[in-house]
Image 1: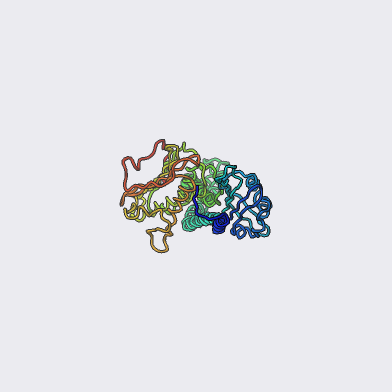
Image 2: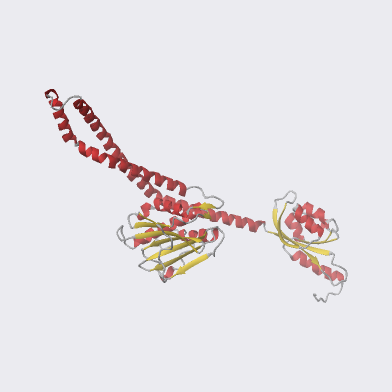
Length: 440
C-alpha cells in the first residue's frame, strides 16, 4: 500500500489528476459504466474535447474515438487485459494504431474494487517506421541484386556472343558443304545409271573421281556430324545462360516457397561464369539427395551469387589462373539443415578484418569498386530472413570457406554467425553423401 501525507481528499485528487495529465499517453478511469477521470493527452491524441465526457457513458467515449468494438466491449465489461493491439478511427481524423491495457484499481476499502484504469499507447509512428525500415531494407537488397546483375551483364553478353559466333560459323560451313554434297550426289546418281566399265560412262566416272578428290568428300562426311554436335552444344549453352538469367532475375516472392538449392547454385555458377572462368576452375559437388527447403528463392540466389563472385575476386587477387585457381561449391545435409559451402584458394581474410566483413559498408576494395553491402546483405538474408547461420573458415594466403546452414523447414535452427580464424581439424573436408561432381 502507498503511504501518503496528503491532508484531505481534494488535495489527493489534485495530485492524481496532475499525474494523469503529465502522462503523454491517453488514460482514463471508469466506474459503473461511466467516465470518472480522463487526462489531457486523451483529447490531444484523438482530437476530441475529453472533459466533456466526464461523468458520461464510457461506451459513448469509445464510440467517438472509433475504437475497435471487440476491445471497447472488453473495456466496458471491466475485464483486465494487457497490451492488446487495436485500431481507432476518430471522426474526421486518420486511423490510429494502439496498444491498450485495462487494470482494476484496488483500494483499502472492504468492498470490491469498482474502478478500472485504461491506458492506451499510440504506436502508429513506431509501426510506420518499422514498415518503412523493412521496405528500405528490401529496396536495398533489390538494389544490391540489380547492381550485381549489372556488373555481370557485360560478361553475360560475352558468354552469349561466343557460342553464337561458332554456331554461325558452323552453319555457314554446313551450308557450303551441303551444296557440294548435293552436287556430288547428282553426279553419283548419273554414274549409277550406267556402268563404270562401259566406255560411254568413262568420262562421267572420271569427273566424279576428280570431284571427290577436289572437294575432299570423305572429309566433309567425317566432319559434318561433329559440326552439328558443336552447334547443338552452343545452342544449349545459350539456352542455359538465358534460362539461368531469367530465373535469377525473376522478381522476389513475398512469401516463402520450396527452393531447390542445387538448381539455384547451378544457375548462379552459370551466370557468374565470366567472373571465374579466367582465374580458376569451378567444381560443384552437389548432394543429389538434398531436399528442397522453405525459403525466398530470389534472396537465396543473391546470397549464393555474392559468395561465388567474392570467391572469384579472392582467387584473382591471389594471382591464380585456370590451372592453379579453384572454387568448390558443395551441398549436403547436416544436423537437419541444408548446408552450402563455397571454398576458394584465394587470398584468405586477414586477422584484422575478420570481425568486420559482415559490417554494412565495410569493404577492402578501392573507391568505386565495392559498396560494402554484399556480405552484410548476405548475412541479413541468411540469419534474419531464413533463421539460418553463416560463417567462415580462413587461412591468410591459402583461402576461405564460407558455410551457409539453412533450416530445411524454414523455421528451425539457431541464428547467428560462425567465425574461425583458421582451419580447424576436419574443416574443409567434403560432407557426407556427396555423390555428384562436375567441373567447369
